[in-house]
Image 1 (spheres, protein in one colour):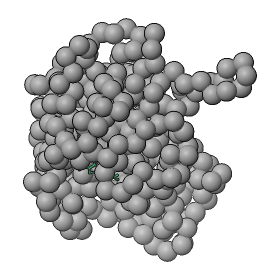
Image 2 (cartoon, rainbow, N blue to C red):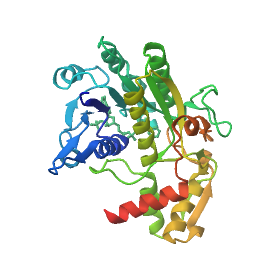
Image 3 (cartoon, rainbow, N blue to C red):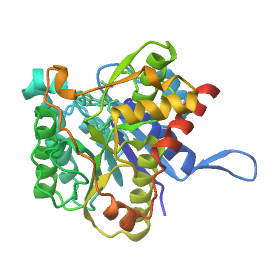
Image 4 (cartoon, rainbow, N blue to C red):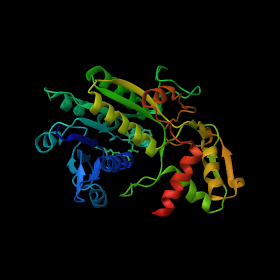
Length: 328
Ligand SMILES: NC(=O)c1ccc[n+]([C@@H]2O[C@H](COP(=O)([O-])OP(=O)(O)OC[C@H]3O[C@@H](n4cnc5c(N)ncnc54)[C@H](OP(=O)(O)O)[C@@H]3O)[C@@H](O)[C@H]2O)c1
């Protein structure tokens, strides 16, 4: 059996980098002479900047391709130089809700992966598995613990583009898994991403010992990045070993429904900071330039039953994140 080909679209982003490193680690072992042996061929896409050197160094042998999801320019080079991937994970997006609100057309063009799906359909002999990242922001936020079958009523452009993406994939492709991710948190990536990371940001502001305001009335089920990566690894293995097409929609959250206040308290407690500096305010007291759903906590029963993956508690995820940062 030839080596399987894995393609991470958006490999330079936060999730993409963690995933690439995990794919690399899971496929790398040593032969009797101590030479690296890889059971996967790995490729990834980048867009606005050249592939970071630190990332290339961390995953030797992987091939970078410049691709624009808006136009599909770049996919043909992948066909020519890498061939048809067995598994494609789409981690690329315009993922900042405020940016989507300001430029809805671009958000739609990037977040609805029509060019990617059309490219995958151009391969006639076999079908690839498409694992696509969606968001908890497809839900309206008016109740707790949304289930996958609850109606998606997004309140902002970001959520609307993600619902449109889910619809496009399910109507036009027959072998896919869509993961509705909550806030992704965890250690920094091998090549640091420009955006601020939630736990590290909270740690930074609380470390100053000054009073800081956090929302008490916005609830999420944050997911530790390594758990999300493990879900993608499990789906990859399933397709490679069973060769059975799937049409799967999963809430991909952690086990705990937490407010920003509770998130900040978990960071403060781990660090031993004064929790009285955490000031509780309503999300409605701040204009963030984009509507944000109040409670989009998710029921993850289907995830637990389907993939048998039990994400770590938020408290443990905070500890793992800050311990990993201390080692870097
Ligand atoms: N982070 C979260 O808390 C969170 C929560 C829920 C859902 N999600 C979803 O999970 C996925 C991964 O999120 P993330 O935080 O890892 O995202 P991210 O760090 O913002 O990375 C986005 C990626 O998209 C690529 N990209 C942007 N515009 C592109 C274009 N026109 N063509 C091709 N690629 C383009 C970027 O490439 P360059 O950097 O090279 O331009 C980058 O690799 C996204 O779908 C996001 O919506 C994230």
